[in-house]
Every structure is written in structure tokens, then in C-alpha cells.
Image (cartoon, rainbow, N blue to C red; front, side):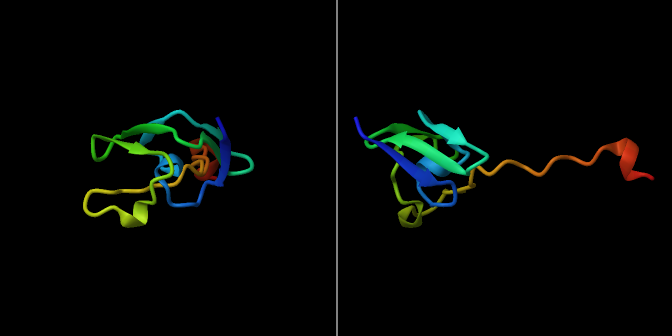
Length: 81
């Protein structure tokens, strides 16, 4: 099976935080590694979708959100100083 390396910003199902399929995420390099013909469940639409499904072609119900890590929360002890 071929593996594909995708930038986390590419709008396909495999790079969406709501897609529950097999993938490996490198948050430091912002890359997602998936199998060429992987499938998983879209947790928003509650349906199976291919990892390389282009979300721009999705009609209603797609809430694509990239896998970039959230910014660290401010430490409440230092925020009030």
C-alpha cells in the first residue's frame, strides 16, 4: 500500500480533525500520513468517507477543521501579573 504525505492545510477528509480514520500526524512539521485508499468516518456527517475526499466538493454538513494544534492556554498565574 502506498502512503501519502499531505500538508495539514490541504482540504481533504484525512486532514480534518472530524475524520476518524487511520492516519499519522506530525504536528511539528504539520504533515498527515495516510494510506492511498484509506477510509474513515466523518464524525460531523456520520458517514464513511475516503481520506482523500476533496471537501470542497461536499455539499451541506461539512465542517472541515485542520489538525493544527491549538495555541497553548495562558497560565492563569502569569496572566494576571
